[in-house]
Length: 217
Picture 1 (cartoon, rainbow, N blue to C red):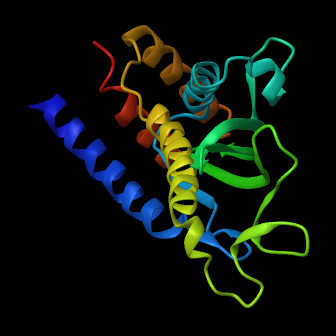
Picture 2: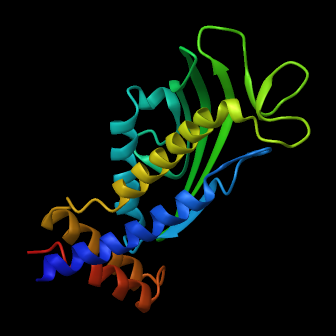
């Protein structure tokens, strides 16, 4: 019953985030709308950083090359940046749309902020670029007069899906319930030390404790 309750609460949070992402992560004449997302997850900052590190290592083949923000011991700083690239976000008449992007991620206590930016869109293997709005040298999702380019409807949907999936995969990684009892106990001890030093409030400690007790046998 306890595990079922936890699963239901997690599912409700996930569903609410998905609906927000689907409504806001849209292609506009100036870029992706609301590409900056903030959400609060009641885990200790150390846990969120470990899960962020796991997501980076799972998502990218060479994390040390695409991520800036690693410490000398190869753990993540609470502010880090992903410089990503995908060679096939969409298929444009047999040619693949390649996208360069950055994700700036900041973790402050339980507040996680993601800022996603499209740096470059290019037809893979060519010198042809795609812009959000057409200019003198490149075609865009929107024409100069502000009208949407209907011929790129599928490409815009593919780009929106790519961004949404990437953001949600990170969010889902933060909600990972694979923490061991020993890991939870260690994080609880850290939180108690912070409380004793006056670094966090009693209310914050109680929130962390309530969450970690779910994992301690």
